[in-house]
Length: 193
Image (cartoon, rainbow, N blue to C red; front, side, top):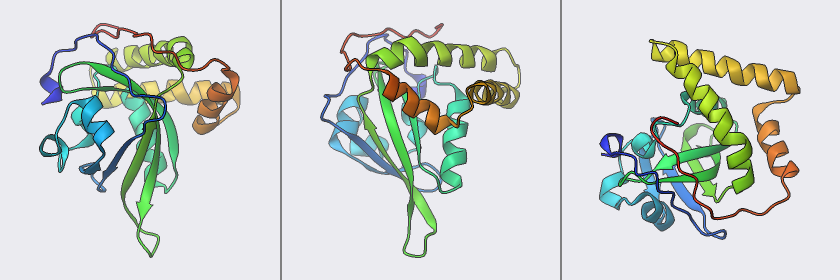
């Protein structure tokens, strides 16, 4: 589906007061998607239920960020992350994702729950896009995808160590440092960065 869709360079937006919600099973297959998710991603329930959440993965999203996300979730921790996704028609949209493990009454992880909001445009433009481009370039320098992902993950870990903070602190500091409200100016992202 989306993996074979050509990128359009067109950015889509949700409203400030909207929340994109999805729930997945332990393997990352979508078991619930709200109307906002389906509208922005241009999918129907039939398109997405039972399908891997990677259905909307944008090719310029660094794999190491997803590795960080999965590491946190599998340890029972929540995580915040900026993510660029791809709609089924090849458009893209940026979100600030808050992903948490879903647990049963015994405290066992049974799936994952993600709420996504409109991100601050200044943070996306000034910090996230340049960071993700450098991480993606590192990933692409390696013929072996796993080695590339490990190398870019090391870049993130080195950056965090230099700043003396964990990933969630880094994201929170970005949000606290920026005083401007989100704007709705499209930022084209192309297949070649």
